[in-house]
Length: 117
Image (cartoon, rainbow, N blue to C red; front, side, top):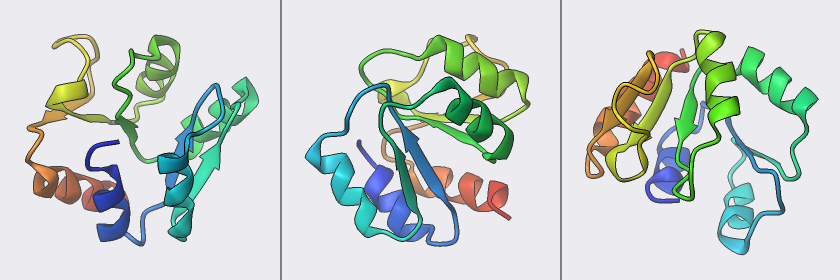
C-alpha cells in the first residue's frame, strides 16, 4: 500500500477508487474510514469500464504484478498512469506512465492535485 494512505489523507477532495479481483485484506478495509475512498472487491468488467471513463488518473500501486489488461484500458482512454518506483511497470511499457521516487510523495501529491481539479 505504501504511500496510498497518506495520499488519501492529504487529498480529501479527490475520490480514490480501489478495485481488486478478490476480497480486500484488513489494511485496505481500514481505508474506508476516509470519506473519499470507495472499494470494489470482486470487481467486474462493467465496473472497470465505468471507472475507466470516470477516473482522472490510475494509481498503479499493485506490487504483486501488473494488471496489463486494465492498464491498457486506462491508457487507451487517455488516463494518466502514476506509480512509485518500487512498484512501477518496466520503463516504456505505457505512453502516459509517470513514475515517482518512492520518497517523492510530494511530487505525486502535486500531480494528483492537478488531475483532480
